[in-house]
Image 1: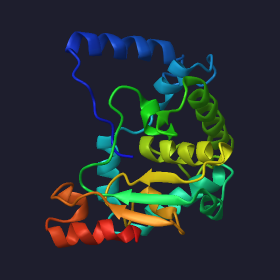
Image 2 (image 1 turned 180 degrees about the vertical axis):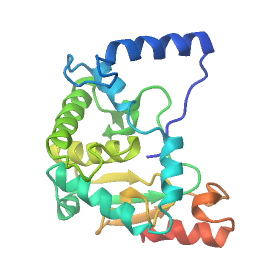
Image 3 (image 1 turned 90 degrees about the vertical axis):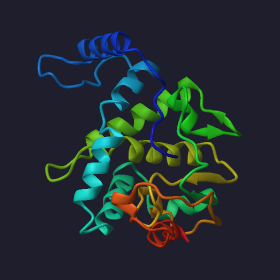
Length: 220
């Protein structure tokens, strides 16, 4: 899994979409609410209120002095969602990293979670999204952020989908790097792979091929 790839959209259309979404989801407090009908489109809109990829990158930059904290945070979210790290061992995970050759979604976010090569259905996406969303809301604490960022949320959701569907194996794609990526809470992958190496995300991974290779090699 990787950050979203946005399709070209004319500004007037994009502005109209954002305005309509904001008006539908903002109540008197101006905050998104999950109290509305739990449709697929509602789930997508709520997902999009989580941190954007750009703001997440800025957050990661600030946390570089303690990158291990990112993995600890992901384990905390996993526990709050009702799973333990050991549960992931049942998935026979193939863990993949690389600069290019992985797959964000192109048209619909459902493409990020697939069963037998096909995006999960809108119904299954909706069911798992709201179940996870409400579980995290119910277990939030004052000292913690209640919701993980966009990519972390979808990673957690994928784990739940794969476990419920009892898949024979699961291919899990790194977001950025590898060593401190949120997917690296996987402790017993059956196979690890690197699609390719290139110079990218240098502010996070380093400015040489050796530094980038070290980060991506962290999944092994």
